[in-house]
Image (cartoon, rainbow, N blue to C red; front, side, top):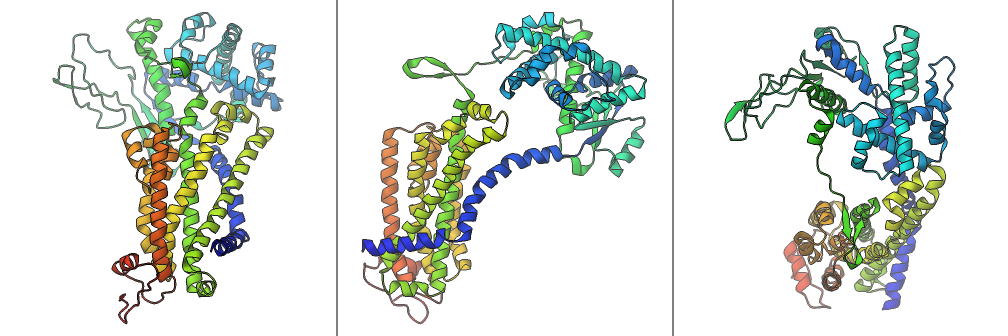
Length: 595
């Protein structure tokens, strides 16, 4: 009996792996991952420049002057990287201070050191920018404790020098961007264009009616209206402060009713007439609006601080939030630093669950399709002349299980090759792999063993369901209707992936662990927890018992339904087959009912 089952399993395995579809499916795995990682970035780069206009009604246009000064400072790292590779002939040359040896050392160093240096510059830039502090290197020391990236004394000194360069570049840029000489202005614009930094392009605006016409014609993506008094009036100290403040750009601009701290209704302040106007089809793209709002908020906040004569250091202290340094409890009760790889490791099971779901569903669906195809082609009758229905069913299930393991092994090899080969072709990828712990995730024995065990358990469980469905159906159309409950069961683990990975030892995770149809996916999802050995033991015993019971029922249905043709049996008839003693073959009456 075992030999015949083996022969059927080998037949199923060889027939499936010899097909072009099988190998195309395996080779598509790395292609899909490459496409998934690169195409979104390419689409983002291919996004057209958003032309926008600003109708600035502030006094002497101070708002847009401040806005231009802030937003026209490009990312220095990318700019200098492009500047070194570009042809500078006929273009604006940078100041002497910005081409000194320290910049050459930063930008010509290896990718990891360059990325680290640029991260430090960016952190300092954003910290000072948020606090409304000018780029004065002498004032950086007061902000050192707030910088989230650990910086040594030498690195901090170098970063201070870089900030001074940034200040020099800011002045150089502003002088040439506002130059009366058109060629000078164009040379600066070409410099930024060469760096590929222009996601948004501002066009001149004089009248709102013209802006509406340009917007309707498609020449503009959107336009902003800045009121005459963007800063507004400071509230009087003794007046109740409304809790609810209208969102700029929403409502009729007349304010709305809120409540003060005591619960009394008061009218919220006027939103000052800020407007963002675009076409209906552009409402889904909020990048431009969010970008303009983010910088505009900082400009207005800085002006408000100045208007009430509040020291910028005190203002920064007032607006500064609390920040918790994350620690994890290590062995012996000691606190340990939380690295990025530790956090990624907790979410890694989601990828394994998704891959497990694909493998189980794909293999079980192939089994269903093959069973129906061989039944409709009468091949099944030829096979049953040499083997029993039970041997045939077991052989088909085991053969496709071997094919599934082959597919998983190929994917594992591709993943391993990716870790080894990608750093050879993409600069900086080695540091990303190390930072996120990708190599540790893909070689984690707990994840790999769990994936292997739960792939087999999940496949055998769902294969026994679908092979029974395939035995009673005469066409794929009939099988699709009966598969809907199985698909619904398979959807639940996908919906529970994030709640479980966020709380792997919570009530939801523990309850679903002991539901056998969910056990393979839930236990894989909890692998980062990890579950206790008792949970592993109990859930595995329940899963094995359920697989045995499902196989037993599937065998009873398979041995009768596999040779039946004509009208599909009803649920009551199938239940009768399950109750029939082993060896008996119910006979169908003329009306199709089993007697």
